[in-house]
Image (tube, rainbow, N blue to C red; front, side):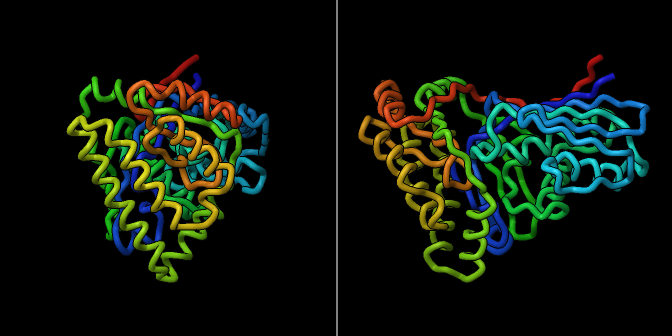
Length: 341
């Protein structure tokens, strides 16, 4: 028997960064994101040889261990190892023996929430294997704890919830550490118009998000007026975006994205650079009405809203500078688990 799972990657539309401590702890945050048909996958095949083999197919990295209650981190596959350690500690209470294979449809560090989505997928495979009594909120919170507490990886909370729940969500991160996921009922014709007019563009660069998030965290901790005020406006942006989508005012997305992008750049200097600014300005000149970097910033994917039939001119302008357009569709489903042979 093989236990499998997949979880969708996400595009963050508004509020990015307000889910990161200490801002979310003190002021509360709000995010609007949507999952797409790019996924992280995990498969677990139990064995009886007393060994644990973990293969990250997208990285072509394989680690092998003797079965144990706890595996050492630091070998390059800490997400897989951290998930195993926590599942054994909290639920199984004994060493396991298996082969695990993981894969992600997008490069790590590209801004689509790859790391947290992979963590959710891995936990989903364990839930399927052992029939663990974990609901959506439980899985998302456990994924967050493993990444941010156990493995001490810097980052926010939105990706774990997006990957687990799926669809368009307005997610509130309250100052009492609670999270509320509000699914948005957006008419199908508005979704079709949105997907037609949105471009997902890969700059063919990646970045280490932790350094940018550390700058953001330090700015908030130091009570930097500009950074905190920018994050207040990003939280406001998520409400603006929610209202526009629910009302079907799809063409407002460009101006709302631009409003957010101008404020996001105030949170940390490394969020943008000459390359990103060049792509952004070229898209605007070609007819896009707004856009942003996806994720923490510094590289990876960008999104642009192209009203009317401007998408074709924007594609040409972007590709003249390098990079590539990534085709996508919105995904309504979150984490899925099943069994194979």
